[in-house]
Length: 585
Image (cartoon, helix red, strand yellow):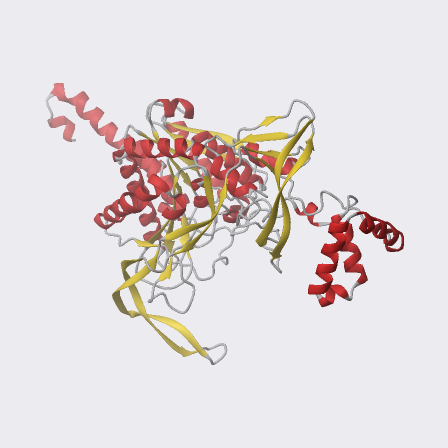
């Protein structure tokens, strides 16, 4: 043996070195993932994933795992923390000036790239193959949509190139969880709120796989729309953060491209960037001043390429966050301070088509040939004909429909479903200590449109119009007052203002006000209404004016009687009156 030829004094050291090499090799083998053992053909099951993370935690003291809350599938959500100094208290980590990156995997379990990539990345960081900077802490949700992961099959996502089997998009309620962050119909979303506010991440990464057109790019990136993020954070995201990620990924051999938000025949002419509302993960995190990203690998690329690209991009997030730690903190601090005193907030954003950005798009020539199904022309992409061209992407959105914030909102305690969601999102509020009559600004819902088909369990309202009035409202002890001098101001405005696209009104939380609970018998109220008109000349004049201007109204005795009822003191006060009240100066 080699050892026999060594000086006696070197034998113990040589043996130790050999044992160390053997031990490291054995340990690395023990830590291989299912993805690696199967040559990048398979992804882990839910149980295998959690068992793997628990095994890593047992091996490496810098890792920590905890159960946070429930999911619709009956299993808890887990939060993994990688902290080299073994500090797993997030309040303490923030005091130590750590930048926290929250990584969410498996929101759509049919898109498992992030699940496998994160397992390997954290293992490599623990083994010292990669270095986690001392000023960065990783927080990881290993699989968010547990119900979808348990519903495993080789037949979901028929267009996707691997792995061999994976989970479904729908969760245990068949909800798309990336539409649930505001309405929180799922237990998953309510637990996510707890995780998000516990970790308070500086950067949020939600790993996905794209659908749509065919092209050469392996990885595309959806960053939260910088105009919606707004202010100094939005400018930094657009001018510094995103360009740095593109440069870093190019150094790793990847031509990064904005998410291909195009579902027409071909994307050759460019597209309008995706404007992520608060129902989506990155739109939700924007409301609390986090840099949010949704990496989207390309579904037709081999699974190995997709996982490696996801691994590489997460490395870039870590590097950029570490190198720009102080700047990221200062921007978030400044934004939190400014939002407390911000006087008006936009409720919608529209793309500015006069401000395109140009990108190099690496695509494939498209053509048409007869369909084997219908015989009619069908689209196909010819991978033997790759091309590069400059395309326009419209990624500038202008804010609009501004609303002036009130001094506070008041919500009667009966609307507990909304109150619980606000509380779960750490909105500061206090309860009235006694019955109190307060003059407040009141919205009356005048008109709206409602979708014809349900969307994620809801018939959503849109195109809402309101009428505003000042009224004295009698509130009860225990009703909730929400002061508008807090870091959650933007979240509060976008959920409580009824014209917001993802407001709680839009999501049907207040639909009870849209139906009458009281009424009248026509033959009885006719006499009451006649007497009321004799005593109220202004209402009579309004009735006559409406008759003169509306012939259909003039021919309907019922409509005219209801007109008088709506102007009378017998009208049901809660009908169409929005039950969130604004305290104004």
